[in-house]
Image 1 (tube, rainbow, N blue to C red):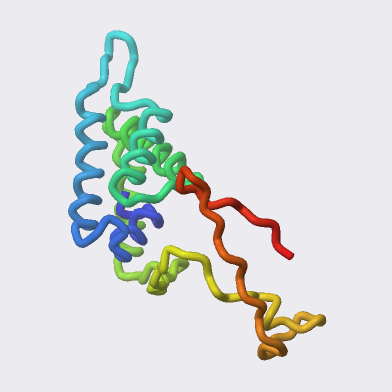
Image 2: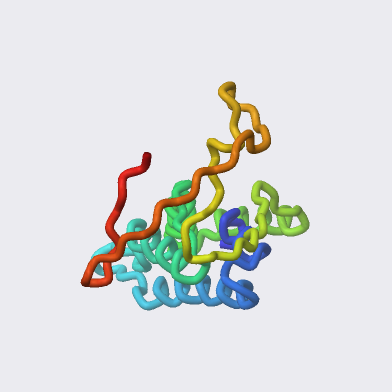
Length: 172
């Protein structure tokens, strides 16, 4: 799972907060534990472990719960396939696919993860009321910006009914 691009980005960019690395370790542990809870059964030919769909759902949901992101790139399905294949081969004593993944991990370990830039949220104070900004005031007929050409007419007085509700008035 260390090869999973989305998980690497989530950890590097701290999507899960300062404990992102620990959350990755926890996620891997959960998946391993769930596979080990269902050992192979030679009597019925089952290789045990989680099935492909359960694996995909568990890692996708855990990713959302821990890192706050829905993955729509198909990567949970891809990772589930890799995990299931590695498990199926390991059950019969074949570690070639696991070794292949480990070699890939060793090669990728030093590479920088790219493809994501996190921006900072701009602090915009909220006044709770209507904005005094009138977009039309600063736009010319051709859409170019300009300064105010004439003073803005005063807003009509608010009309409050007996129950305390404001009556909506038609703009003029």
